[in-house]
Image 1 (cartoon, rainbow, N blue to C red):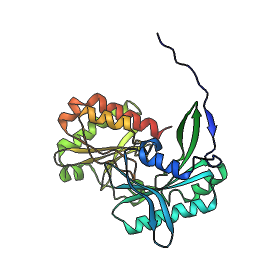
Image 2 (cartoon, rainbow, N blue to C red):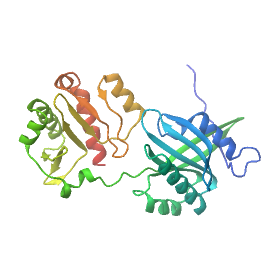
Image 3 (cartoon, rainbow, N blue to C red):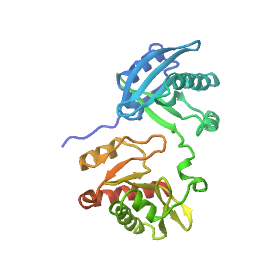
Image 4 (cartoon, rainbow, N blue to C red):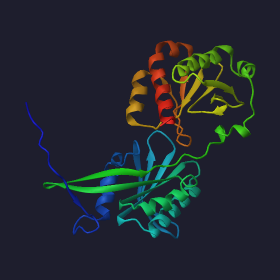
Length: 291
């Protein structure tokens, strides 16, 4: 039986390294964007020229959606010029290509708490991700580790602002969709009541949501159609969950990054065939919402 030997890595400063520089780091990320932990990304451009504003280090696009990431790299500590440059490039790209969703990404070796506080002032208005990297030497080999220290803050959702939603009733949805697909919502509510018996349905004009003790609790929303129901649990998108959805054989639409929701088409037969897995998804969404 083989045993694994523990080897303590040596942390290396790329800023002070005589050979490894920002260009080396940029090339490593471009070769394998998955190391950033932002999903399945495709490199669109390196050193992308910005009108009257220098060059954007890296531009990536999600392989399965219209999401783009404007990435700026900083060796050593982050500084004010770095965040200004990152936001400026993000703003230029979103104005040039409004058909895409854009997220600014800052990568640095040292992201200080003060810097996080400053970035947090923008987050929610500017979709921005801060990633801290570590260069690690193990023997004669170099490795890179990336940790997201500030994720894109989801915007306050208009869809969840109950004060501006026009409330309806069950009859409205049975006419707009049909009784059969609204009954799927009933089945899902029964599952949810096993998690929290105080949950109840609230019929809004654009979706059926949940309330608890009269207060909105939309960690999952339902949108009945004529022949199927669109189930929208709010869950962080991960490769593991995406793989499980594919293996399960559910009809999964494009992930809604703006609102942080999976969108799944469910039919009556899906509820019979995949009830156990759907129950697991609802439990995950409920757990994330109540952490």
